[in-house]
Length: 430
Ligand SMILES: Cc1ncc(COP(=O)(O)O)c(C=O)c1O
Image (cartoon, rainbow, N blue to C red; front, side):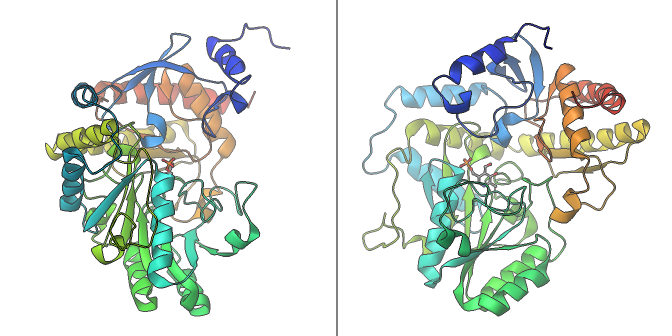
């Protein structure tokens, strides 16, 4: 029987659940025990119970610079003082943002703005279907591309992750294993004439940050070229977080179309779809375009001002150096912590992203992720939260260093990690 009084977070969720289904506005915002946040500052959040936590959840990786980055907040405030949305023509800021993205992202000859990563992948897939006159797509087990029917399947479980998707939509999506080029080749052999696109996260950050094996992305490029299908990189996580040009600039593989979101806005709602002019000019924003593209709030002033501030700050060159260095320190430190605790561990991630999995390597395929000790993974993160460090307590969830984090934060985190892992190994799940 429970003896402790409910926390403020628990009480707030309970109250909200009377008017919001489940009390939260997106799936998977209900960690156990619940955390409701009152405010954030830099690399920290403070919950409604007054606990301060170092935040590596970073709003599922949307926050790269830190909470309330002063320059970004000031730029957005100045911009919205003159209006938030006009809904006709284009603003100077929208034109400038598009020019910036075109100048940085290798595949981006043209770019369109929308509101979320799901919208961006929706548009990219529809564009590929229009461009090829084909309807099927290939996605990989473990990748996440948003909530819509073509992709709402085979994320951390096999099959669709939502009810309500028509069978006809499910049939249009072929699922293959990430890093298995032969599997993709076989899909093209069997159904090449029907495949409009291959869509992938270039690093599968949604499943313990699986890195592409050498040659895998190049192989996808070659297979798509041979079959006349489009290659779509979903850079909603990798874009701007790892490089101003996205992971495509690091990998040297250029997709036909790419999608961006999250770090582009540093928490503000803005996303983008970018790609080759020949395809992008088919969107109905042009006079003769036949692929519908619309959104009442597209190109809204706060989102665009926020993204311009992000790019401005990234162009100064310190952010990636800093978050890559701290990310590397974190991964190395966590390996040592796990070693001292005598637990099998593999630390994955890239740049600012890190995930401590409790398993022996290798960690290269989705199948490999199933060897992770999911119970220990979640228990460890709950113990961490008790010690002032927040990583989302959900199996295989990645964590993110922000620009606001410091070496001192990493030191505190590694200290907490050792104590949390020791406690997690000593206890069993409540
Ligand atoms: C790789 C990737 N693509 C697309 C999305 C969907 O973006 P949004 O949640 O903004 O719709 C996400 C969200 O986590 C993502 O990680």
